[in-house]
Length: 239
Image (cartoon, rainbow, N blue to C red; front, side, top):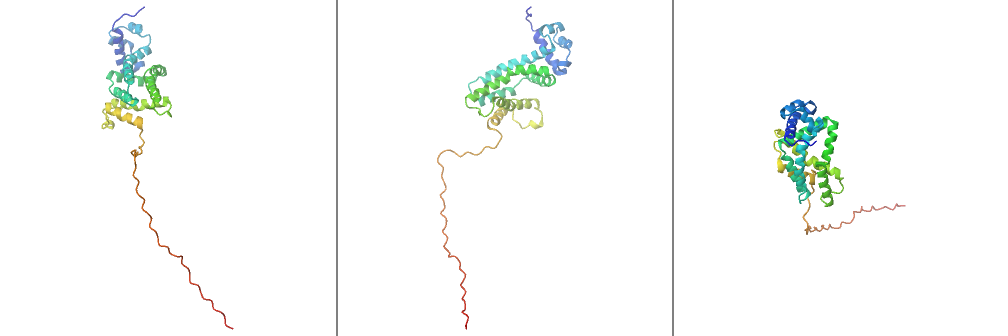
């Protein structure tokens, strides 16, 4: 039986997001979600057979739209470093609804192994696969060091490009981040770290002719004959 076209499912998703944030997925009441959505529990089960399905749908509504934007960013005809900078800038500009979903994912992914598995499956087809594809393309073009395993490079990219932007947003009022740049400026600084590291770079001499200092001839020292001790005279004994 086809589901009737209406905005009931969206009202359910938005009500569920608010209740999940307030009480967690396990603690949220479907009856209260239904009341907030101005519908019945029966309609919730009609669209979402289990609470876990409802949770995943709450995530997908926001995450799926965000993936479309990130795909467009990484598909641009630009060097890998520039595309990753734009990716970081987009993460810095997440909406409040998108940040709410990040909070839900972190909390529920840690608390439930079943939800964690389902989330990982989705993310493998989402941002994880997206960044891995960009890294593989960078390897093919010589933009990524071939000594690094693609998965390791992908993990490092996510750790440097995405995580600090989220920390910056979640702890915006913290004194720790008071002097830290934000948005695109932070994205550019992070990509500099990702592509050039934090180790001190050796100064490289400019290519071309180098002028050598003329050698100063060593001063000749006067030859001094070796010192010889005076010979002692020997007396001939007298008869």
